[in-house]
Amino acid sequence: QVQLVESGGGLVQAGGSLRLSCAVLGRAFNTYAMGWFRQAPGKGREFVAAVSWTSSTDYADSVKGRFTISRDNAKNTVYLQMNSLKPEDTAVYCCAALHGLWDNRALMGSYNYWGQGTQVTVSS
Image (cartoon, rainbow, N blue to C red; front, top):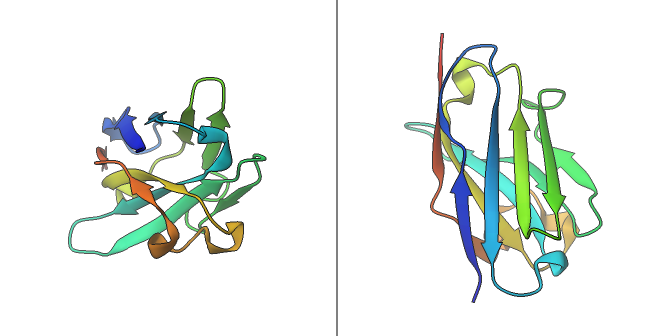
């Protein structure tokens, strides 16, 4: 069994920064690719970023150049550094673990485990 626990959300002004963390409880963290998804009010869940077990990364076009995903395998933790935040980044952010093909990293249905999510609110 794998559990994911997010932290680091909050309220920030536009242009500010936040760092989200996702602690993974369970075995074999370094065999999972990890992703971040978000869901804004009234919208569907969307892919934000992913990092492979070898630390390759991928980002949604909307966050490229502003967000950075990373992982610390010694701490079983994945991070999402969010800079230059915009009001449209307001959403519940969830981390997820993928034990499968890296090619499927942007697909929600490919992920095996999900966290509960953390709220990020960006004020204008």
